[in-house]
Length: 137
Image 1 (tube, rainbow, N blue to C red):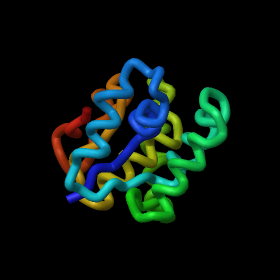
Image 2 (image 1 turned 45 degrees about the vertical axis):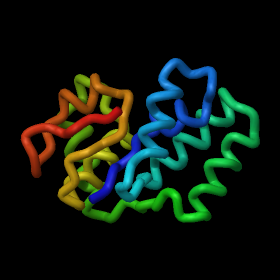
Image 3 (image 1 turned 135 degrees about the vertical axis):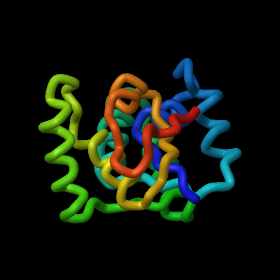
């Protein structure tokens, strides 16, 4: 079993000043599941770290990736095609490719759990493999 991570909980866990820091850090530390990070989330996290946090925050996260705490999952061609479908279907939501890639990975792996703070998008989007995603924290 795996927990697919969106940008929000990862950023909050790195930022002690974030109001969601405690619950996100606990989620990531206390889980016994594999922590999967879609590659597009990795890029978005780098962007937000550079905007909001000191440079060492990103390096700490990257050290954890290199130590095997997180597994980076690149999108497949089928994932990108699914992202395209999702972005067209949910154009009114302004669903971005990063969120779409989280859902595409969840569908590909048959995983229902997603770590996200973005309930607006992830509650509205209907996956193909389950009735609804289980959103954490």
